[in-house]
Length: 278
Image 1 (tube, rainbow, N blue to C red):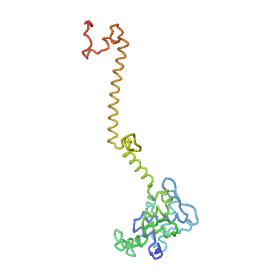
Image 2: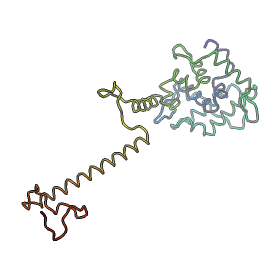
Image 3: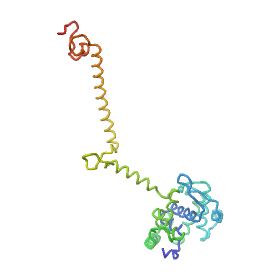
Image 4: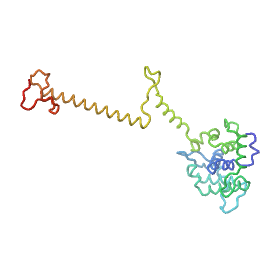
């Protein structure tokens, strides 16, 4: 990033052009982190730290006052820092009135230089061309080693999460600025293991079955298990009926202890009442 010093726009402004208000606020959060003014909180939040860097930020002026160009970025960082006195998510920062006001001052400055166009304040062709040139000249760094804080912020402004994972990986993950890729990889591995089998059985060339993995397969497996259970229950009832007949049928008829009362009348095998058994 040898050409960083020649970039007239601030990283915060470039982030606003490249990714909108959220990207600009993320650059402000990372800038505060690099100066030791904020740290990760619980559950993917960010929280302010009482340091000299935080206390040195300028107080916010009344919203109706004109903002000098040199104070637009400090006011954004100041608004973010003050909101972070209580832990909050980045998405909550975007709802804060002072933060929204500070972002609007950045957007106004970009409109003055022709980078955004009214009334929707969307990026102009010149802005998109500028971003393309900068991304080509300043690709995603491979390591944070040797990068100044300004170069790290420029990388985050131009490349978003890809740069966050390089320049401030632990802070970005713990503060909820990047997705938890490890969890996604674990889920993908479980899906792969379920489909291909984690271990083989003899004669299967190392390919095993890890059980049903889809809703349809699980439903079919439950239905099959129910049918097997029903058959097993029927067999158990037959065995129990035979055992009852054995206990009751010791009549000396030589039929193995199974007397006539062991057969249900509906089966046609039991003798009619009053008939003799030969």
